[in-house]
Length: 389
Image (cartoon, rainbow, N blue to C red; front, side, top):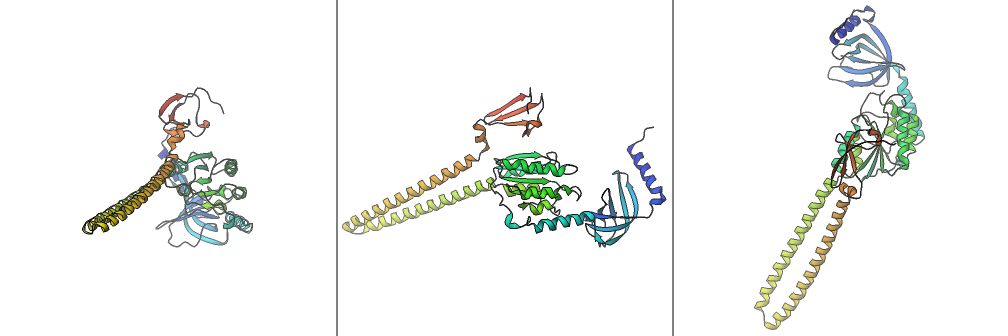
């Protein structure tokens, strides 16, 4: 027998709705990910082994994340989304916190006593970062956001990604491995990042071993985990916390576009001042010349000599100012030229691209892949014949 997805969903909903034992249940658990809408509250009810999404149409909420509660209501199957949730009719708050929240608070208190959260031990972030290490999953949107910000602010920044798991089994270990990997590299800063998620999704960033790994890092670490309202132990121990991965990238990089605009504005202002002073001195010299013509010959000779000396002095001073300004401009242009990524390609380096995206690791390629190699003066399309790790 073959049925449609809609028929299957309606069948499951009918089974849930028709089971009288499920009409009025009391379920005990810990509240997590509480979100308040205009008329409804959404939260997760969990214990050590399971969890279920809940919704409650109630204007008064007297519980918070981490609270232990008993909810009354019945299961609800949403056919269109294919989700099983729990429709809450009443919530009774117990006088104690949930086990996972208490464990979080105990760990936080322990690290505070050990001084791991003290501002005095935090390392300064390198603001004009040239090489950036990122510990995250390469499959999410995090790297897209970081690349976008860096390319907009300073395209010369070299970004190295350590691909790791950001939730689930072994995730804490792979994050720690990424932090340790960058310790013996020349990266300026390390960003530990992942997108938003539930408290359970972010639990890997509350691990005790991870906290110690960040505290022991020789490189400055920026935590960009979850949304702005999410807090993990990783945020507290890191040298800086960013609300999002994009903000973390902004913290690390200098805005060269704004710098270039500011430099141009200063040069224009300098040129305007010099031009104004030249015009002013020229007008004064013309005035002196007219006055000298009206005076006696001897006085005229004396004044003309003074004028010539003044003119020579002004000319030398102006030439000196022009030379100094020209040297400063050349120095600033040389700095800008040094930050140009094309100059790196002129040294013999090249950039590989596959399907329009940069290739950062050999693991991204396989035999027979079509790769485009970018040189400073052109591009070459090549095919991968053999791979070596």
